Image (tube, rainbow, N blue to C red; front, side, top):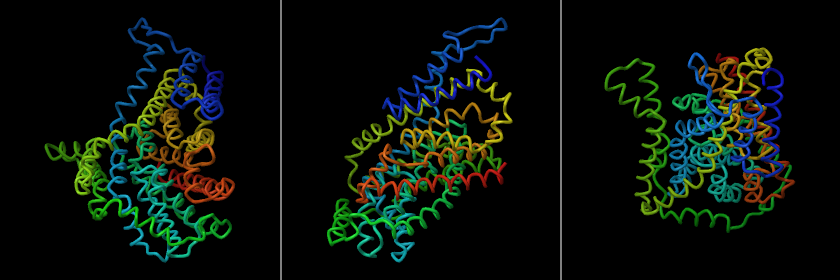
Length: 463
């Protein structure tokens, strides 16, 4: 199969995958793997290896699936596990709460919406937004009581801050997986920097929308009593004593510094042992491993080192489904790469060039809205985009990083009833579902669109 019929088969496969995940409730792993198999068969990928007269080997469909699956694990499996483990340790030691308190101290209680917005943005860099909201909700409620601020405004600001860094900034699994799939997994510092830059516009949008919607919608916990403050104090008391600021920051900051050192060594043209050492420590796997060691020091300081095995086990249970869905996305990308799709698109490159950076955004937004998971949207879209990057003129590291940002912006658009985060925000924010649509869902739409506007502007600058 080739030409226009192959494009139709690709579109039909994507639609079928969305229906399987969202309407028929088939697990994303099975849906993506099944669609990959069907697309490979329809596209004419040979069932077994074929050797041409010149000795060139065309891989069979089974080998293509295996290569796509194992290749993804090879490139990002350890990175995702270590990043998630750091987040789990920060939660378990109270370091996430300490980071939140530090943000509040810097911003001040006179700007509570801004405080929780930035607090969420910082905490969700290593921690999943769902669990981050649960962790920080007592602080939100305490601030509502202490500052007499709208509960809805505080809920929306917190959820927005958490959501923005969750999709934009590693070491959360989604952006790590997308970056690695698109070939810049060894340049996570670039992705982090681009993610921080792309966060600026949606942070402003989230802040002002929270201030606005807080005047329009009232939640069930607007009238706070003393129990709120006690709940926060009790949560802090569970940790006995929160870790110091430097200790709380170390598991996040040290890996960033090490990756920066590796990049500096490469750009400066260092040689010999100095370069080897910096390149080794700056590799994402090693940098995050060092960050994990600082996390272990946190556990020891909190006298919870005996919980390390349990925390590791919980982390593996959490990231397992993410790893498998990510690997399935790699399979789909591999099938697309060998199906002749790239050649077909190359022949019609002018069409895709007209859509440009908006293509990954639209695809990711469709997947996000249909099936609910931002991580699935990120990883699946990255898998689809991987073989198309050079054809669309997105193959350079900076353009690839911008593509990750476009996918991330789509992965925010939108959070509604099929997204667990929607229910976390509405339930803990004590809002009814219809209020959740007016507040949280509308906010994620604005965040996604404003983020994509920022990505587009950056794409005009960085070519």
